[in-house]
Length: 276
Image (tube, rainbow, N blue to C red; front, side, top):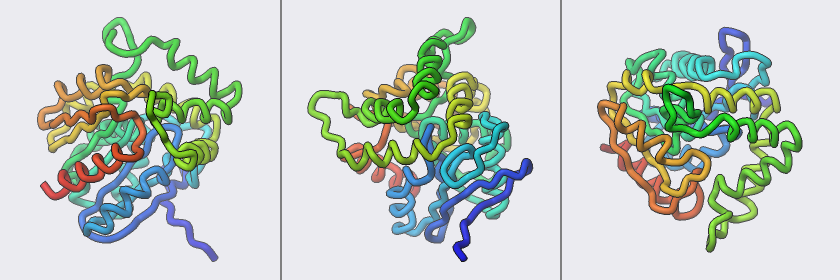
């Protein structure tokens, strides 16, 4: 019998997680539309350096429940809180990429930092991606409607196409491996279309401004200046002004996804932040 590690949420969703190593816990939240597998290299990295690496599949995909309801930032944050509480974690370092960065910010805004020592937001969707009358700094709704249209028309090809700008493989001189792009596609295809569709609204329309203002622990904002998915001008450059204890590190030429030398740079940055 294979035992799959999961927690059960208040609405009876099963949330799968990986739990590697021992020591101070480092909990990773992944981006859309991926799974915990995208963090495998970092899980091994922190476990090899004396930390406990934990990553979960967000509800809607991977090995977690594909719920019809609850595909929103509040519920994602509550699921993260339940994972932390169920595993009785303290002195946690939270690491969130893209949508996962929004999940981490909403967790801290909603549940506080009593269990958390510090956090890393890499290519995060904070503070707010959608342009509105009160916050015109984001992208127009048509951009996100385009994602929804592509997802519902032919999600297999949509994810193939998305992988190119995600890893910057559409830039001159880029040579992202076929394996990396195939792995991206495979993870995406494990996410149910309902959860993936709903998550577009969650990561684009959720305003995390007030959540960022509440974060009272050290924050490392890490972002590529060639991020075509979550442009730095919309996100990290604005977020750093809202966070009381934040440092912004910009990776020249780096895309949204971690690959090649950009992943190596982030890995060292992560280890330095953990040890600091």
